[in-house]
Length: 106
Image 1 (cartoon, rainbow, N blue to C red):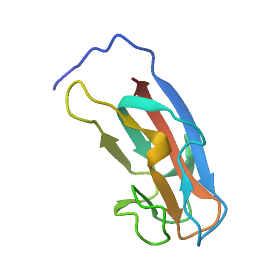
Image 2: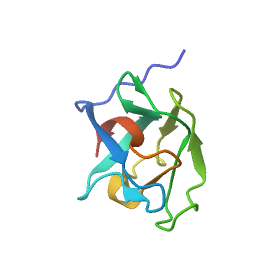
Image 3: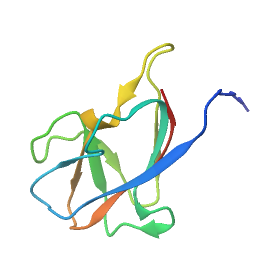
Image 4: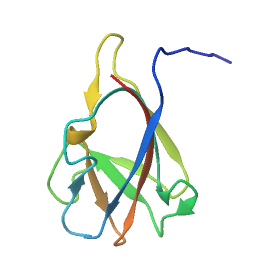
């Protein structure tokens, strides 16, 4: 088991999408991170109806990372770099599904 220590406080948020045809950004403003755990849930412990998708594309049906309800993906950029939630889009097959995000800010 690998344990990594960060000199930062973990933060969290939830993003829902009410439209099944228009992807939404994970955040409405820039929010940079060095590591994130994204769970396919409407809230921390509330399951989605179905699979949700995240990715860099803003057009419908082009997000390539599938997150089944209750499962989690981990995103970590290369050492010394960061990513921004503002550049990640959420697409859903079922209205009001979303993601619960925990992350270490940059």
